[in-house]
Image 1 (tube, rainbow over the protein chains, first blue to last red):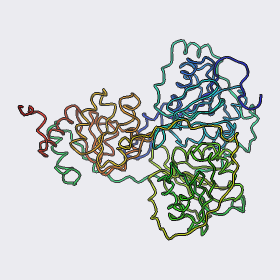
Image 2 (cartoon, helix red, strand yellow):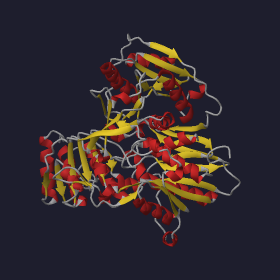
Image 3 (cartoon, chains in turn yellow, cyan):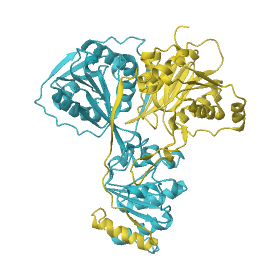
Image 4 (cartoon, helix red, strand yellow):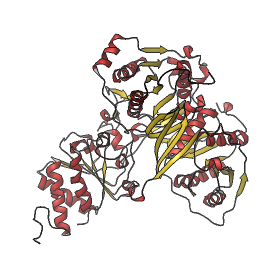
Length: 276
Length: 349
């Protein structure tokens, strides 16, 4: 092995997909009285862009064979998402779970996931979602690539692998750019670029049989306590302020459509928003 | 804990992104904001400009407000790729030890910052919309937190440089002063074959007329899951046309493949501030509100009186959108007299 992920003689493509479990975005709403987020009882989901990354990995396996491994870092409640990923078709999953990892910002997160990828060892491709819906930094994927010293292609809506190389088409502000690099590499996948498949019955049976999710502690990865969790995080959230939104008129019309529309147009004309 | 602050770091830097012969808008916007921060700290504002044949852009960046540009010219830096640009930034940061380094949150800026902060082991706050300097002298990096309902103040106390990316189109571009002078410092950073680990093999420019029409639209008509079928967006197109606006969508129609990602409003899509935002069949998930809550007037049309969208609407109609929207179109057309009312047959030939 010459470095992380140096490919041994084996058949197919081995892809590691990094996922995070997040509160289900569409279930979140704002309390009309307190004007704060209602978080209690909100169900979780696999971070939606990570679902697209998993789908991309499963499609690559259909073409090239090999394995799809899923990796996450978080509390053991994240097993729910790892099991869902297996039910969708992933071969195995790894969860790095340790109280000492709490409060990690993107630096120790990238550090921890890189260490886990090292421990998994032999791989061709690491896929991540472009960003998470709860933190939306997009920094962890490139951070992992930086730690592992492998090439990265971010914001890809298309990905193909041929002859030991990966090609990714990334949608950037002024167009579509196609990058190419040798494997092993890290690619981040655009939210919404494919339709993630549903879990299958066979997949659910594999989950039921158990034994496919491996748990590692920080010690298992040989991580220095000073480089993980809150202690290893260069940034802190010093304070959080509530955004003052403009006051809204809040006039709701319950009348039949013809009347309601007339009232609405009168109001908009009074405000000078609609001319005619 | 100020004793733990690493010493010997001085100056504010911006990563100046050249893109096909011009400075990226976000870089120009950032220069204006970084100038303000540098002035408050009483320090020098420098830019790092990697590229090839970009000396003219260095002069431009000075005219926008930089005191100094570190120019790194190499044919291998002509188009942005991750590792060579990371090497340039890491090398110069280690050499000159700036206190603050700022990036524009373009796709490339986030790609670069994400790799760089892991390589040089320092903090990076993403997509900031405001900056300040604390009484202790820390950079106060302010970014929207979950759902845009709150703003998080991020500090990086013990690592240097303090790094952040700035969201696009939030900071006003500074005026360009052609008389402004500054220093251009040529820097050599060796880019080896190993560094060039990716190649850009193709670029297809997005036609100008397709570039995010919804960003600058005065009026937006946005559709959600309530439309029920992609065909029904025709109705919204008609409404947008008669209002002189553009059609946008919430996440569900984009997820379902009914509408392109380019018109998605919300946290994973775009943030818009039109004069009038008409939300049709949109329930109002927090993620959607984050992208449109600063609109001038918000109108909601939804059959569910409990839909969250009504909470932030100026005006709402509780009703069947398939009755309300056609009625709205009919009345607007009639009032305008520009076209025959929809229910009248076309004039005989």
